[in-house]
Image (cartoon, rainbow over the protein chains, first blue to last red):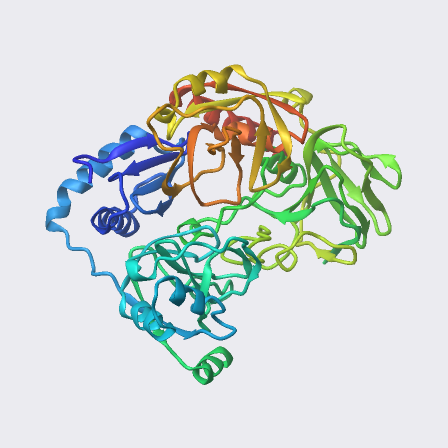
Length: 228
Length: 313
């Protein structure tokens, strides 16, 4: 974590505030703190904010604000944070039906890590994963916290179509595909829960800064949840 | 009320408005029109003083049959608009009547044309916007570009025919353009590469869409001892990524995060110019400071205000 945040210009309407140089839950906690503060008490002239691993982007209207003013505001807010309690992250449980057609690469992930498929599922469901950020596609979570025992390289040939809801592993990451898209992750299961539902409230299920756990369900439970 | 039946969709025609805001934190990009100046003028010409939805046509425009009478204005790139086979004046409001056929005969200048209708194109708002986002399957007509047979509705409008703007306010779209940029966020990843960036001519490749423009030219090399990628971070429209191969990509309106270094960022007033460049066109970059960029931003806002005042008389 940096002693002081770094401020970088992202064009004439964006200010990037960077809190550290690595992927680290402590740094992301800082991102979340500033994000929640800006959401709770917005700054005049700021139109939108995007939190990511170790930085936050502030979009502003140059007719109403400027980087100097925003920097001062962020620095002032940081000082008051010692006395300001942020709500603890919420943990959401994602039901997953592992293996079979839903997780065609479960056997490979097991074999690669010298485990049984049951052990892979046990390890995958025992972790708590930090949602560092969302992006790439709507609602796609970049998760931290995958056990080293499950690290598996990407597919050599990406699939043309990975169905929405697929849960996969790529190197040291695990994640969920919110929409049908091409993809090279090793698929180990599928969730019947929609991460992206444009007309739903909210349209996106997950929020950056919160946590996620996977829970194993049977195919029968999957079908019941999918049709409800 | 129904305004158009789509006879031919053109190469890539979508319904767009000023954009979808406050969902970038969830990975939903801002979308919206690429050339905001042409869009805002088109709306003002037909008496739309809000952020009404328009059609954004790309290189080869659509063929549209008029169903009910209305008022349109076509701005942006000159894709040779015709109404009943007669040249349609651009940057002007024109009355249209049932069975008129609006079509486009090919690109003369620029890349994207905006077709505004008095009242605005009426499609449902999704997450606060009518903008089409094809990857997310939302906005516009079923979240996709137009296809033959689509029928488009409009809301009630109030504009009048014969509105024009002074010719000195109409942009010229060249095929050799100068784009003004602010350095960063990752300008400290480049030294010699920075010289290459500002002294070379880059050509727009065929990989150029609303998500980004991939350019071809001298490879921009990263400084020794720094990584070629970064921890994924937010990206803004106009961010210029330099991937490991050194061929820059100008991001436009359909990406929220990325892990490539960004050498510089196009100023917001010049993003429309990028969107009016087509494959084969040439781009040069010029550095400006942030204060200058804000001055240009405010000048453009003033220009829009002047236009609205002129048309509101």
